[in-house]
Image 1 (cartoon, helix red, strand yellow):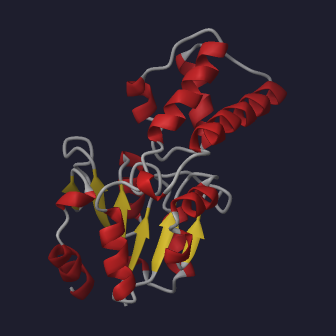
Image 2 (tube, one colour):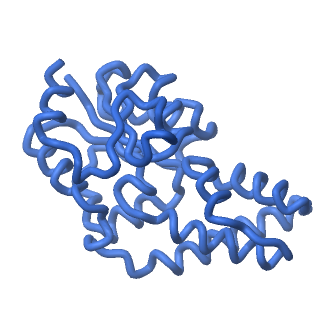
Length: 216
């Protein structure tokens, strides 16, 4: 039996822009800037590790209590941005693939670093489509460690080598590859070149392509 694992941010919904705005406000409050290019490096990275990288870029240090306060503040800002998410915010082509997998009774799991995965899935109306959800609350190791995908596979009862993973980050693709899964990159080919298959978006993915992966 085959199973499919989806990342969330940048794969199902474009929440990367909200992460950028929240991290940028945090950096600006600390007295330095934060660029969209730097934000790209945080894709698939945990909140703790992201803040560590940002502080390093800004040549700034925080006490343990200040660090926790800033993480909480960032998340509050992020949540304020996603408050109005609806099914209209699902990226083009995603629902078509998820609906096909559902029709074929293929188990679907989420494997995301986000600690807000559940509220996002609820707001977009996708919660009931997933047989299992593994997010930042369930793991201790960030991608490219494959922990999140390994747990996601276990929760849907599918062997690692029989899982397909949709990812938009380098770290996520690497995690899928390390786990021995089939990695499908969503994004730019020169960035996600380590993926087994790469598409600019779900709109490019033909159902026959998915059928072939599920039967081989």
